Image (tube, rainbow, N blue to C red; front, side, top):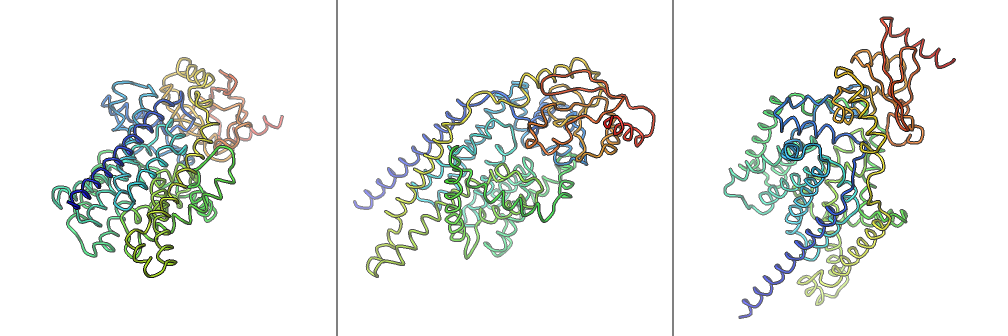
Length: 532
């Protein structure tokens, strides 16, 4: 009878928390969808993804996006992106065309799936209460709310990343399989491939599985061998079918220096505190972030010592890669790690209270503590974290901008520019612009980015090498110097061969007719003209 009552109580408890998780997930979805903003920022990764998606939907050449890759400014983006996100967005492109809101809805849907999958992964180590708190914090943090209006690969990468880790965790820690070991290995390999096909950094899952084979299984398992073999085979097939996919990423590593490594390590480490941004008091966020980082580190060590977990191995590998990467874009780079950080933070609270109770109570009380180690203290700590988080989120949203995005590709000035280029330039014109992929998407003109630096000779040499005839510059660059790395390039190099054909409050368009003279001579003429 007692066993039946205990079983019924456990079922009721599980059902109650399951309902709480689903209600919270629904609230996150409603909040995100009801606050989608019009427009899109100037970050033009989205433009290349949409062109790829449109090409898939219309069975056109995948790599024909109109973007001319500039190896002298490789940080803008690769020749072609991996096909994961474009393939997922292709049905949206086929039905809704260039409707940005439709793509944003799809990205919110991917994020909600990620929350479900991550909650399932964390459930084995967190109490039901802490599992719900983790879902609430990750779901409502402004860190994800702010990026919901950007069409980016992170949205799809999140569910694939955590799904792969969930399948790996089921095998390496719990010896559970989906169907059979062979089928489980194929499933894991397929998820690893999809993660890599969405973001190239997903490749860290391959060595993560190998490390799990060595340190967790301590032998070559059928699941691990099949997973690695199938993932590598699929990646090779992708490379053969789409050789340009991801090309150009390695060239970005040329900019890696010791100073960039240190800057990235600092930016990526401190950006975890942005989960608790409040819009008012950055000092409170930083202090709390430092304390949470210590608790999170404690939780990470407790979970991964003496034997690591698939999540711990993959998270460490991912963090190492983004530190090496030359682009110091702290928050965006660590977005896939934020759920894991909150998980380790809550695990740290659970573990620390357990250790404290066992250490400071008498032997008799210690026996009780071992049976129920986190009942009161852990509850208070977790509840305190939830209250602090919701207070921070409320403060941040109280000053958040819920209106149309004030800058970017759908401002009146940008639309006027795109209309002019689309309607008053030749179809074979080649353009130089600071956001070439956006220009190519909205105008249908082949476009490239400026070379980095302010060397006039190099500028004109590159312009001539790609056959550039249209040069577009920003007249408001002086006010936006911190917005883009190429801001110092956004003033026209004077030349007698430039004809201004369009101007508005933010942009000027020049038609360039290069003479047959030597490029070096043109640069000298440009400098002389500027001096006069």
